[in-house]
Structure formats: C-alpha cells, structure tokens
Length: 118
Image (cartoon, rainbow, N blue to C red):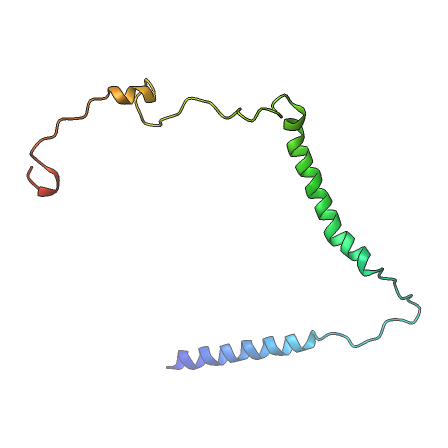
C-alpha cells in the first residue's frame, strides 16, 4: 500500500513539473523591429505557378524521358509487337511446359484420403 502512494505522488509530481516547464515556453509577444522592411509576398498567380506549375513541368519532363526511346525507336508503329517469350513453370518438369502433357497421373488407390483408410 505504501508503494502505491509513492507511485501516485511521483506521477502527480512529474505531471505538475511538465505543465510548469511547458508554461515557461510560451511565445514572446514582442513586436517586430521598426527597422525591418515589409517583404512583398508576390501575387497569388506567382504562388500558383510555383506550387502547381513546377511539379507539373517536372512530371512532364519525366514522362517525356520515359516515352522518348520508344517514340524514336523502330517499335513506335508496330502495334502487334508484344512480349513473346516461352512461359516459365517454376517447380514443373525440366523439359518445359510442353512436357506437362506427357506426365502420367498417378494411379488412384482405394486407401487413404478423407475416409481415413490407410
């Protein structure tokens, strides 16, 4: 019971200390010096061009650099050209997918399975 009281007092002290130190970090209410000039922030159009136009321009350049090799190359007009590679069967027969038709199924037996006859 004594350790519970010590723990509660310690928790309350830590919370109080945190609130006290947090209140010391309040913002200063001082005014800016009179010698500072007021900066011109520019127009809304300038901000829009900067925040929207520049990212769109970067995206357009990346897209152009991505599609440029296929537009310049000889494959640009070929609509029938597709990926034509032999299929890969991982864990299948070593002779390839054509050998799957030659594989004989294992004979079924009357033992085992879901009927639990071993």
